[in-house]
Length: 203
Image (cartoon, rainbow, N blue to C red):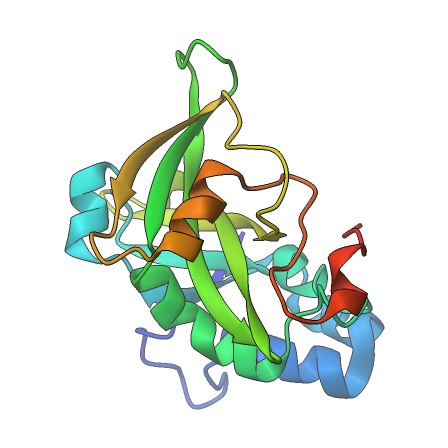
């Protein structure tokens, strides 16, 4: 596993590669070229804020593997993340309106990871993004959080699964965000004013 950390001084022969470089390569040159360059590589997204560490997200930083980035290309317009949305992602991760723990079972015995609910503007509306993370030890005493999924949530049906436990909610959460927490849908829909997106499922 290759880690490409934006906090590390690059050597002259190997220029620093960020997750945004991967996004740009996917947009301009496609998945075939990007996969040859970045497959099996991880990229630093943002440092973990202290309040999240206090909640149990004890990695020093959020990282994202190439595979998760590439999954958000060649999709319909409602579910593909644009370059602007990728630029917003680090700040959005650090400022969620809710965080949950999610488990492998409804009895909450086997913790699988954490889900961060945050908002990214999209078109005339916005999408609520669920960022699934797990803690991985990378080197001695250097734990990191790996983003293993980014999904959009549409809040008209369903509810938080029985395998999730809410551990944080921003005191400034507005009624619309609160309703999404009460009734998110695991089918990965965007919350947008564009009616053409409302009935489009993610793959």
